[in-house]
Image 1 (cartoon, rainbow, N blue to C red):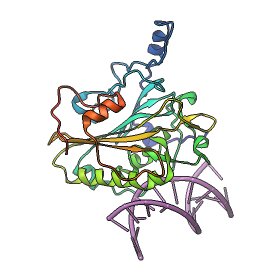
Image 2: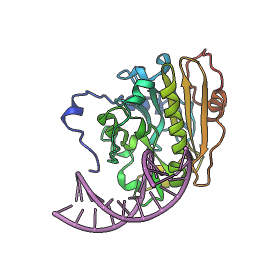
Image 3: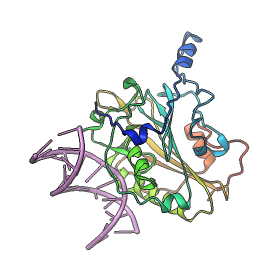
Image 4: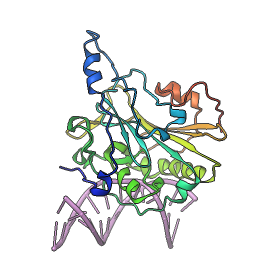
Length: 268
DNA sequence: CGGGTTCCCCCT
DNA sequence: AGGGGGAACCCG
């Protein structure tokens, strides 16, 4: 219901969802007061798509509010660390380069779907977003997708957050285009992490209570020049273009160490 | 449920 | 003016 069966071509892909439920159950018995606990990522998280991660480093969020059951999802052109509590990504990661962007000329499909690889109680449904007042905002943008299959996959709600409509089509769209243009002119690989940040007591949409982020970020890391910068935007229709922040500042604000340490990185 | 159409807003 | 990010509505 409200999900998409990709059909034979995708079934052959042998995607695997890395499930951390067993670890979560074990962790729950450890502490009598399991206040904000985070499901530990299994050692083989993203084992099916290691190429999206800088030197194989899988960023793991520190314990924080609204971080629930974490699952690792591999797609053809991006990977999602999904949070079953917020029913959104923690982050979505892409590895872009000139060849990939030169291929990114697929026709936009607009076929949004609930991702059947996630348990029902951990995933957003189409009905949660309908008439919510928010748009279904891509984290890995449709405009970056190099193949028809990747384009279709990008419309998974596991790649979405409830986003202020004017923000999505306004300053955020420009950030996506700027990032795409940068990757097209880059010498080599550019890693991009995109995700939401939630305030305590944030709003939710729909019966499924999909959490509405207060901010969105997009980290760009050029693996050739070792330059990095991050966009940090309020999820608000009144938000305007703003100057990027440093990698270090983004780590402070999110509690997520996106890049392996030690790493040489400088601002743009 | 699929597909097509119409509309909206923002940015270049 | 055109393109890109969407929503909502209609119709088989």
